[in-house]
Each structure stands twice: as structure tokens, then as C-alpha cells.
Amino acid sequence: MVLFSVGAVVNALSDSIGLLIAGRVLQGVAGGVFPLSFGIVRDTFPPQRMATGLGLVGAIFGIGGGIGLPLSGVIVDHIDVSWLFWSNLIAVPAAVAAWWLVPPSPTVERVRIDWLGAFVLSIALGAVLLAVTQTHEWEWGSTPNVTLLGGGLVAALVWVWLEARTPDPLIELRLLSQRAVAATNLSSFMIGVAMFANFFTVPQFAQVPERSGYGFGASVTVAGLLMAPAAFAQLIAGPFGGRLGMRIGFRALLALGALLIAGSCLAMAVAHEHEWEIIGSGVLLGAGVALSLAAMASLIVGAVPQSDVGIATGINTVMRTMGGAFGSATITAILAANLLAGTPFPTEGAYTAAFGAAAFAGLLAFGAALLVPRVERAEVAPGAQPAAAPTRP
Image (cartoon, rainbow, N blue to C red; front, side, top):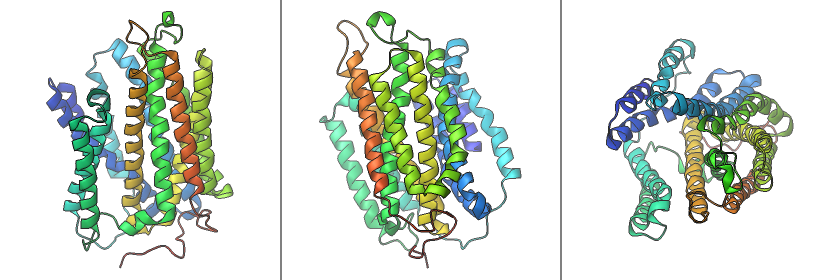
């Protein structure tokens, strides 16, 4: 969190894209606190409260985005843009609170950090994500795009080769191959596609001038506020999701969340003439995201040894981030390919197709959730280990 704050200062004072990227790299380090928080809950919460704690932490991920979008609109409309980054200094009291209030985790055997594995994995993910996010400028078949995609895939294969031969690997490959982990990660990827596609599309749709035949001609502030109900829905559904998961099973909870996400995107595709329709669909989206995140956290925590919770949930977070990148790139391609004649605005049909693509991703997430194996008791108490769970020597 301290590095996140330093990165915020660098960004706020930056006068070039290079310096801005450097600041964002520093802030990216703080992304690790999200999976770490799952490990802290696992280490410090009693079993009867663990599902609720995991659900709340999972919901916080979406709640932050839901609050950040309308807040950013207010800042852009009424204050200097640099305050988008100065506001990030809220991480300073958060760092102090973490130091004083978060209890220490139990002592575990120290292992060597797999720096080489971390570096190669970063190269692989960075190359693929850069290629995907730049497709609207480079096009899929362009030399830079093909080079980055190919290089990223080669780096991923090298990473697999290294991890199989490292005494203390960044992540045990057998964890990724477990059906529960693999299916949950696939669902996480698809939920990332749908979630970020909505975060990307709804504000743009709302700002399209009404003379275009659709849209609301909203300001940046109002466009962001249309996303706020989704954040409130996540705040309510997050803790509730943990309790519901203990009743119906976290596999079923993940499937339910994915269905709500798909339904919200489908509703936006067929009904987007009024603001209340966007708000209602956003509430469904927020509830679906909160339930899905709560379920994924509990499924991953219940499927891996305690020593691997941080890594496994970190990979799950990376999968969701990659899904977000693919979703944003796909939506950008759909909108950019269908513009109203003589304007920079996409056609209404393009937005309908974009919402439909997000709904399809939600349905794929639902299908992946059904691939998660049924577990008799591990779903009821995510703190308990399945009998067949692998353990590290």
C-alpha cells in the first residue's frame, strides 16, 4: 500500500506517458493485496465466519470499481485530472491500518522465492495482455500483434517447463490442473470478460448524444453514477453470498452469480432506452459479480493446501484481469467497426452486440461453473481441506 501511494504521487506529478506508466507499475504492486487478503482470512478467521469473510473481501473488489467510476466522473468534471491520482493517497491510512489492525498469520516454513518463474510469467502475461489491448490499433493479424501473442505463448511454455523443474516453484502446476481450480479459473476469466465489458460500455453508451437516436447525452459524472447501484448491490450481496454458499454450495453459488451476470447483460442488450433500465440491469450485475467472487474465493480456498492459498487466489485474480483485457478489446473492436456515418459514435446495434457478447461470456462462465466437481463437506466449511487435496512436502 505504501508503494501504491508512491506510485500515486508519481502519476499525479507526471508530465509524460513514460513517467505515468512507471507510476502505474508501482501501483500495480498493490494488486497483490487482493489475493493476500484471502490468505489472511483463511489464516485468522474461525471456520464458521470464513465464508462470510471471503464473500466480503471478494465483493470489495467490485465495490471499489463501482465507487471509483462515479467518483472519477466527478473529479474529471469538477477538479483537475491529477486528482484522480492524488485521491489514491487514501492508501496511506490503509497501510497504517493494515500494520496495526491485521493480526499476524501463523508461522510457516520459509521457502525460496521463485524470482525466475515470476519474471517469466510476467513476460508471458504482459506480452499477451499488451497484444490484446492494442488490437484496436494494430489489428489481430499485424506483425506487432502476432509477435507479442506468439512471444507470450512461448514464454508461457517456458514458464511451465521451469515450474516443473524448480524445487520451490511459484505455483505447483498440479494445482492448476485440478478440476476444481481449472474450472473456477475458467469461470473467473469469463466473468472478467463480462464484468469489464460492462464497466467499459455503459459509461460510453450513456454519454452518446441523444441526437444519435439513442444514448442519454450524460455528463461524465452522470455516466459514472449509473454504475453506482451495481456497487451498492455488491456491498449487500457480498457477505450474504458467503452464507448462501454454505447453504446451497459454492459451486451452485458460482453458477447463480454467472447466470445473474448473463441476465443483466442480456437485459441491457434488449432494453436500454431509459436510465432506469440500465440501473436495474446494473443491480443484477452487481449482485452476480458479488456472488461469483464470493464463490470463487471459497472454491479456491477449499481446493488447495493452506500454504498455496495466496498463490492460487492470485492466479484466479490474474485470470479475471486477463478476461477483463480480452473483454475490453473485444468490445472496442465491435464498437469501432460499426460507426454512425459522419460521426465518431458507434451505432446502437453495435452496443446491442457488445452487451450480447458480454451476456454470452456470462453463459460460458455458467457452463464452467457446472464443471466444478461437487464436494460433500468442503463447500460447507471452506476452511476444511478435501481428503484428496494435494500437500506440499
